Image (cartoon, rainbow, N blue to C red; front, side):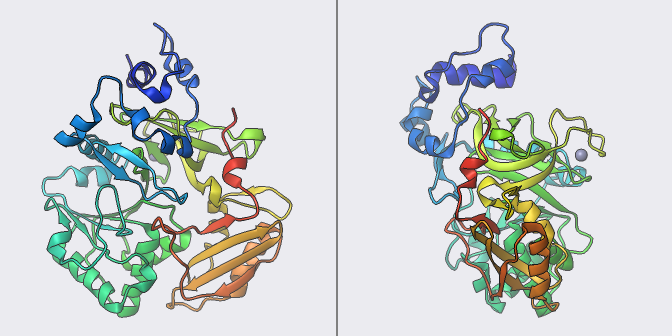
Length: 422
Ligand SMILES: [Zn+2]
């Protein structure tokens, strides 16, 4: 039986959330059985946790007491914090395998003595929290992972914070640096202004949120020549996609079954919504979990030569971060970002659409190159079909989740409009 069929059989027979779904019939293809399962959206997962996710015959209290699993909260971006039943051995194994499609990173993470530094929100990443003011030694996990950041908003880092993190990288000498791209971009321009060139890791892996092209430009400035690899995962489901050397995204097929589901109403037929079924973890009983993210499938083979059943040309951002052209067409967060990519001196921004042709944009300068706000305005006007009002600001607020939202529409619920076709 394939790993996917095993999950579907286990869920349909033993997991209360799926009590109404018939298990796979003998000889039935996995794709046919999978299609019977409903798309699982975040609100339903919230209601199901934890009772409806625990397989019949398994004891949640015994598994928690023995340490086999724990409750872990996600840094959910919808305002509501999702919890999952967390199995550390499963997480570690699938995370390691996730690097396989990038040769340099894959070799590095399997070397004995591999060390990495992590830069993201300190509020909670997986099962770890580092808010406060702890000495470096207390932020090193298992002698292997150093958590750099202790402040919730990167705009609040002092020069001392920036220098401390550079000092810690120099002392710890990590092979890999895993970072939220917005946080690393903020830090990179601080280092550039301070004239600091920190330890150069062998690779930078971007995770946690979608990188802006302007973040990538800031990061390249302090890590010239270091490969910057985009990866995609979530606390709910694990490490699902990583960009190969050719910049296309490859899956982690041993641990996830991914579906590229067309959008309802025939909207943007070249895009898809990503549905995830984790494999090989009897506590993580999510089938067809709706990530809320839009991707652009790539039907052709990848130039890197790796043969994969599924390939993603680009991650297009969350459906709820899309906006509408003044005449109504859907524009993804990545398309908005691409319009701002050539704007020199721009570090970060936030675009809010309040009405069909009402756009407000806050732009944060990098204070290294002059920023011309009219260039940002004109480039966005060409994309949006309406002229936005642009303000230069010192910073934009971080969301309660510890992430940023670069764009969004407030006059319409695009997460609902860009739902999966049923
Ligand atoms: Zn490739």
